[in-house]
Image: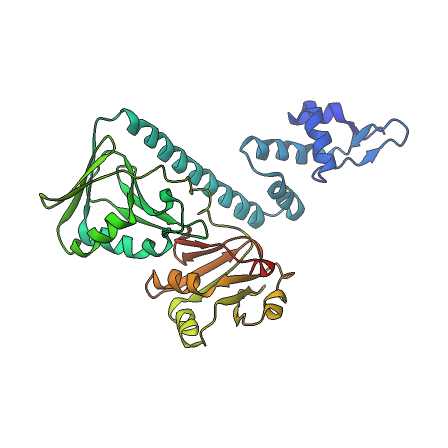
Length: 344
């Protein structure tokens, strides 16, 4: 044992607590070089002290244990950079979500707020998210589109709990933060008028006055609290594939009418679509961690909400959401929940 370090020495040298070192041993992240069969004492090799210090550093910045394990297992710059870059994006997403939540709370004490956006820009954004909003069978708070501005960007959100769509616009001039939920009835009535000019929403308390180039179009109320969906939109890990929008949309359009598709993402990034016309066919991919059973309608609508270009499809597994993003953007614009074969 002369060349080995006790757990106490590793704790002092790395900054990790004794309980943390025991946990990382049980998790398989940092097992000791030797465990005394009689006393159960843990002993570590001198080289493990550097690993323990690295673990301590990564845990201080909130990196999950599984991702620390990936870095330690590969021990190369490319893997570390990929994992850490993804973690930074998550932290940035979390900060943006926190800012939005804080802004929403601050609205309670704001006498009024105003949002101005080019009418045609808002119309295009509404067209890209409206399909995911709830219908008459959904909760009242989901039969709406959330408009959320941090003063420089306007983000629209729509979800019916089975799919989610979002779109972001850059505002021409800074404004005060605004968060309001407008019902789909109001937006559907407003949409045909968004052909030119600037739409302005003046919020005072729960009342919203809608103006188009100084002409009042009407007055409405802010909808019920929209659910927090920011955590859903984060780009997942797992397998991903880049596909051509036109080719994929054409594949769906030319196929016979079906209710469900089996979508498989292969190791090499290839995408295969199989019409799930038979429950046995659908169940064939149940144990495949790259195959998802998807609503044909939801997939078609998500693809129809964006223009030509390269898309990235990403999924963590057969019961995790399918994220659809533009290939040149890191964040999804649509998320679709898969269907369990046994739930059909």
